[in-house]
Length: 139
Image 1 (cartoon, rainbow, N blue to C red):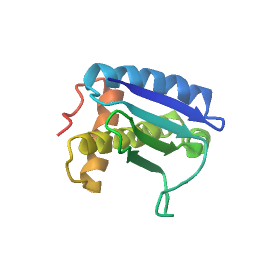
Image 2: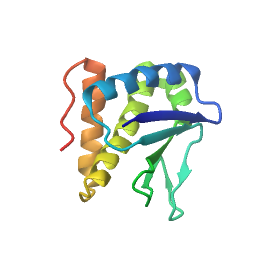
Image 3: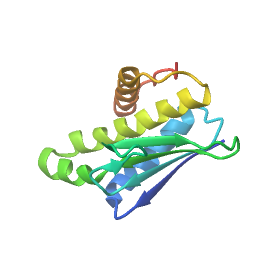
Image 4: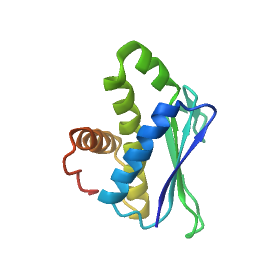
């Protein structure tokens, strides 16, 4: 099936370009059996469905044919780029997107969530992408 990215509210064009390359890399290395749409939103925080402020959120639609959706707050990218440079700004967003992808794989396999393992997997995907090495398996 597919992996798609969309952008809301003025996401940095340089970040959009990098995510295009990251998306291609992800599609080469992972099979997305159900559609996954990830929205990058130019805000500091997203309000989750339970009212909690967060940097990422995801949800699975009840209709089998609908996509899993995720959102990532990326306004801090511009601040990180200005204050800490690209070596911090890009990996931060890539790791967050990778965490959404791990939640996606857990959801479509009906596996339990473990935030620590999701964070670790996201960091490993980010490192693999940056270092141009084989990515971690989804399990």
